[in-house]
Image (cartoon, rainbow, N blue to C red; front, side, top):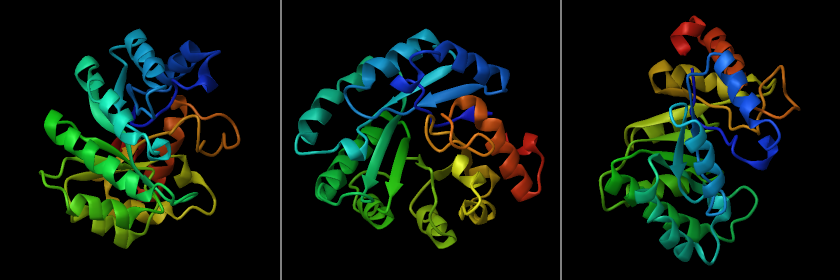
Length: 241
């Protein structure tokens, strides 16, 4: 099992990060990928990667909720870091219109720039999409470079939307603890996504799966997501992991 999206570098884990990593290993998690959020999170993320270089991989990108008037300056400062650190993807990038549409145009432009980074470096993206699928697909449709590979993190749209995304390129879909929630609609997406396009993730410390919902999430909880997906699809946990 791989935790393809975890923020265990954030301050929620300051007191026990080594224990968190140890528990993940004991739970059978083979690797953890850390998506970045902004300039301030880079040192924390890089430090954790350097502490566990063979177990934790890092990405770099500007989270859409951190896109404001100064986004071009921020991206200019972040771009050289892509040559400084061993990034495996550009992320967490995307568009988020759930709380606020004020920065919609800036988020669109920031996404376009960072998708070009993917093409330049030959790495995939990690896409944050919240109430913004139409906007994201529009940016992808108007790229003036080949569409990079990537994963749509925490995907919770409709079966029809899965197909809309598929039509645009070589994409995967991240499934996390939301799939275990009682009223979640994500289980109905699983057969449409298929095992070959599904990536497990925690989004720790958020979106903690049942039976730990309400507590801080961590990578060690990936088996709960893995087992739920296996049961929903009628396959073995080993086939999912």
